Length: 284
Image (tube, rainbow, N blue to C red; front, side, top):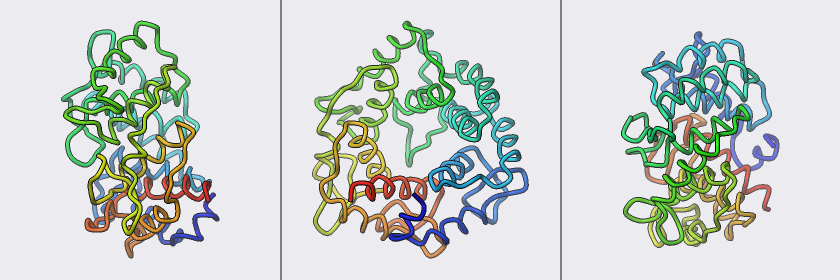
């Protein structure tokens, strides 16, 4: 798929951006001058290389970094990210070892849903469904099947945040709706929604928003909405407009920012831009 993406963005600059931020310990840091390597950036580096069909450079170092970085002081989201990245890199046995650590922080049977433990992967504060989403991804990556009791507790927790046609706290959002639907789907429960369609922005803007009838669009709701539509067997309406939106987010350093206005590149935005574009070009 990498060759297809080359038609729309500067893929060489993307790879240069990521590679420059790899450090000797096998980890990555989106600020190239800093050696503050971390699970989040390393996870997204692994996802970027995988999306593009490429081997992660010095893979064994990255495996060691991820395994050693997931510790008791690491937030549940970070542990889950490390597990998924280890599984992607072919180290499933090491990833499964870290499940024990994850379940010390995320234990639905004991009513522990990692809420309020920090470590938000999102821009701003963590949503209540964030740790559940990442825990679901981690469990799925190592083929772990939760017990019936765990399934029921997780589904009950998720459904607390059902609001009309979506999921949220004060109102339904694209992020929480996708996180809920992904987790429920993992547990074997499918729910339909029109929320993603209602947040699509066409016209001069393109992209998707967190809530209907709002501006501006951002890369994170665009990523989640496209993933959500794909999961539901639906398609976006303004495909070329969304591609144009994503193209406009690439910075001169090769990375991507989150909106027209906010200009800092990071690995999270870069992966989401590439993954969103990957979905869109398949629909052309």
